[in-house]
Length: 288
Image 1 (cartoon, helix red, strand yellow):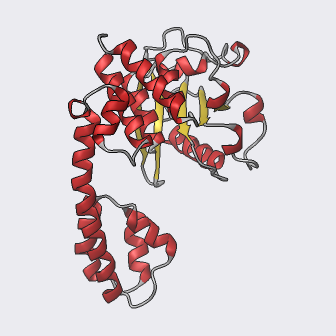
Image 2 (cartoon, rainbow, N blue to C red):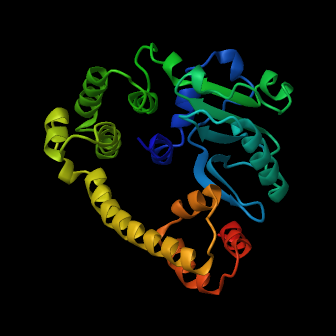
Image 3 (spheres, helix red, strand yellow):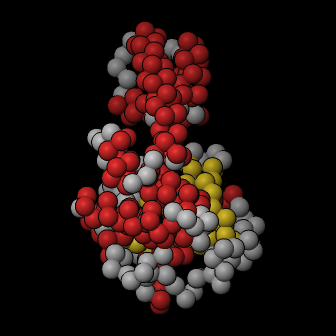
């Protein structure tokens, strides 16, 4: 399941949902930086020039003295997550010296077992609350949780029956509300990815909705067409590289190539005709 993408869609619909999540934590952890009005925030991804960094989740206050929230959704173990976040935040501050110096780094995990075990950044950053880990499985017993938290918890339920019942309840509760269609779209997307082995008709029956009317169905249809083009372009690129550079492509570079978008693969197809060595390929990938 593409859970990080789903989480950021949840935040894009309403940045205030981050603060719904934070209020589920102990109040003593929040009194320093909980905003008076959570709606006074915008959510975006930020590209850091010259550093080859991209921060996917940045919550920016409307005022220059408000707190900035950097959010990472980490559903698998990453032994360098905190170091990367620290480097990205430092780069962001350096490139935005006029912005607020008050910031919090939030790492959202499904459970404690997924958290990085050892870190090389100062422990004072954790003691002060600057780096704040959140474990979703420890927030599941909150009575009447806000919708944002309910959507996040839906992504981590281990029991299929529990996930289905929760999804049906969410759809039923929000079917006739103002933002109901957006919430149903997110619920449908989560369940389509969770039950990828099922047919569209089976998922429709399970949720008692018509997927064809939801955004996730339209997106999946478009994504399927795009993925086919990517596979074809990728195969052509790898074949051309074998011809131009008669040595094995290192696993790291190959993984980088496989992660390129269709547009990037199209550019690489043209540019690689001038490549002579692996250094040429690596230089191109570093720039793209």
